[in-house]
Length: 134
Image: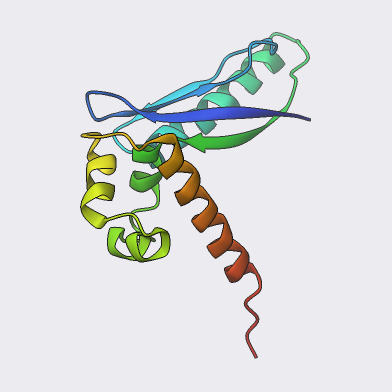
């Protein structure tokens, strides 16, 4: 099964969209929504619809495993019900007001800030993965 990047971005009108970052497949899947979660659901639904279409036409369907990649606004929107901006600020060292600007699309983080936040989040995920309860 081929791994394909699915890019999630916040549009200028505040909606979210997802597209496949691969042009070697025999199909293209996209998704849209008012939230990143809605766009992901629309994307997954489109994938299932495409699978059925290929089946109905008797064509071979190449399965794909999607790796979702977020722009900062999409990430903050998608995980906002799990990680507060205050918590993310403590975790990453990025000011909460700045995170709010990224969430609303007012500003975009520099590549250095993106890498810093990604590293902090990955390290936190490793810490969580090591947790064991008795």
